[in-house]
Image (cartoon, rainbow, N blue to C red; front, top):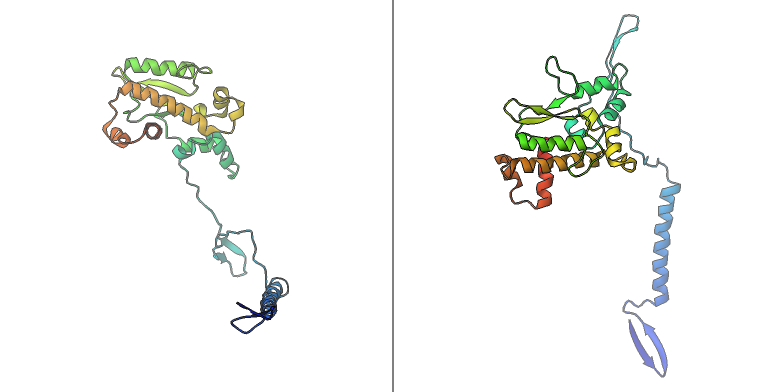
Length: 254
């Protein structure tokens, strides 16, 4: 835009030859046209609005066997399988609560039935619901270390606890060494969690499992005195102290 002065009066001209007021009117007209078209599409144009709530439905198999009179003899029944990993679930959830919630979706199984299916089959003649370390490596304790572990179990903490840890025991291996045996439904129960962590953390089973694994990790480090199994040592090499503790918790849980 160029400004020129003539005889004290200011005249305004543009490169396109249009006056400024005409340009504003043209732009405003275009904007009004676009707004009107959008309003028409939104409120008056035919069609259906998209449904914001997502719906996921499985395809229904169209299979049916009927007799010559059209009466159904066999029809398709939609069903699904539930696959779970107890080792993954129980680190952040309460075992019996999961089992009871699943049982609510089944007509012929109780929470106790489902929990039993999540646990490994017990040895012949031994009670159900127990898990024993099959091939103890990290969780193998000599007599002195086993005494320290026994103190941790009986007091509920390395320094000071709220009473014994229910559902966790030492198991003799027969060569003056020990490993652990535990009942997940008892050790990770809500009652145990509330007793040791308090009612304020009733909804945080992950914190209870983290505490158990953290203190057990300290006992494992003491028991092995820096001589961890080779594959674990390689996994921890080059990690920071916090990362090493997290990796050791994962290895113990596994």
